[in-house]
Length: 207
Image 1 (cartoon, one colour):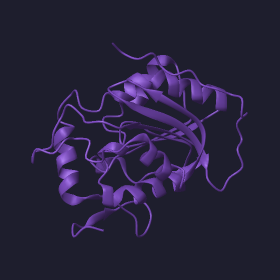
Image 2 (image 1 turned 30 degrees about the vertical axis):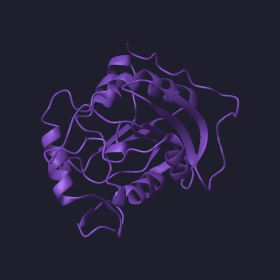
Image 3 (image 1 turned 45 degrees about the vertical axis):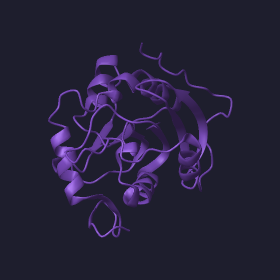
Image 4 (image 1 turned 180 degrees about the horizontal axis):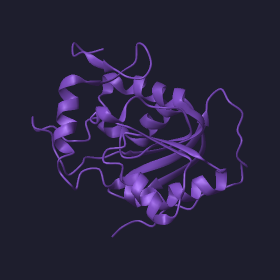
């Protein structure tokens, strides 16, 4: 771990963000155009919810809760929607749910905190997760000049990291917002409850 002290999250001993970086993220969220990716993934999340019979969802790194509003606009009525974002402490700690979505978040996580973030997602997913990763640079920058995607790595590196925690049920590359990919996963130690032939349609790439 780095010399910076990470903030504890919902589970004892887990550190998911440093205090200084939390302040950076809070400032970035003042930009109305920061954190819009979840709106574009909402149709795909809606399809996952319907096909897997999801009634509870934790939005890990929820930002301004745009995923929730987009799902409502589509007509999705969840019994439980649990937002979590360390930049928004008023949301509280992450809560267990059948599906944990983590959209346009992981590439923003500090490398020293990444394993704790993935462990926390794993601990809170009762059945499935939907994770997206952008593998290149962002258009936005931090106050110190670093790119907003502070953890940039090729898909091979990310997949090795993700498969330490999750069974990958589906993988799809994407060019939305640049090069990247998304996965639907289940718990590494759990039985798969999805038809292995079931596939979900990727949202169309924006031009």
